[in-house]
Image 1 (cartoon, rainbow, N blue to C red):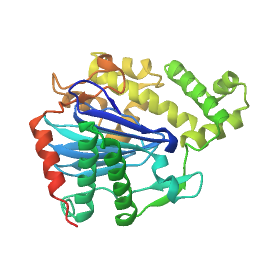
Image 2 (image 1 turned 135 degrees about the vertical axis):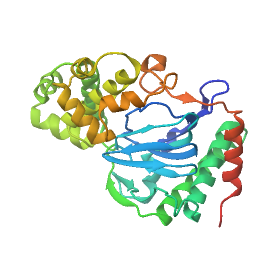
Image 3 (image 1 turned 120 degrees about the vertical axis):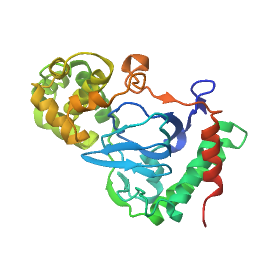
Image 4 (image 1 turned 30 degrees about the horizontal axis):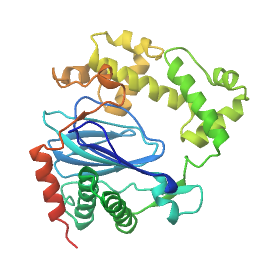
Length: 322
């Protein structure tokens, strides 16, 4: 097991033989961070406060103890309108469902989202319980931590499969190694050139494959087409600049590859249901976590010894109704 930070509530475990990855962390939610996980599920449990969660083009307001599962490849972002909003998050790889589906496929769960009327239904009590067990086992780092964490994950998977409605979908992570390496090179190219005017033809010339092959490979491996992926990267970086800098909106839009402010505004409204200017007005001084702090994937992890975290974990480990 890998622990990142001596007192941070952030842990990772891997089972290489099963190609299985598991991580857990608790963090304070700050400004919007737009991202996606191509081969991982994200389980979000709100510990305290109120959280605005955008998934694709849908927005949900989560309150304390609400549960939300995000499928692989789904763009998402969250924002805390008030201070001290905290969440417990568990990531696990798509390979977790490998024994239950035919090769090259996995499950999507589109109904795992609690709301006031069902927040304490036994299915969500179980999810909070198993997530709490996973987190506790990972944080203790004892002789049976790995055994406990994996067993708890398997019980969490069983809960998802039996108490929700899994839909079988193509697993985008099941391409051969040659395809994977090609896509990694294409993604690296986009990350380096997203601020420029780049096209599918540019990727074809870079990879030395024809345009049709590149387009098909990208869609089959990433799950979205090249132009949507490029726009996601541009939006991700523009969103961070909007929160972290004093640049005007046109500078941010043009500087991150959008053709004009109008297209940036349209993307912003589509995903976050407000304009960039309206979002900027909502930001509170001192509650912006910037890319310069530790990169795009930085988070404001809370302490493992945090009294409120320990209290909520204790509640989750006691509250399951069997």
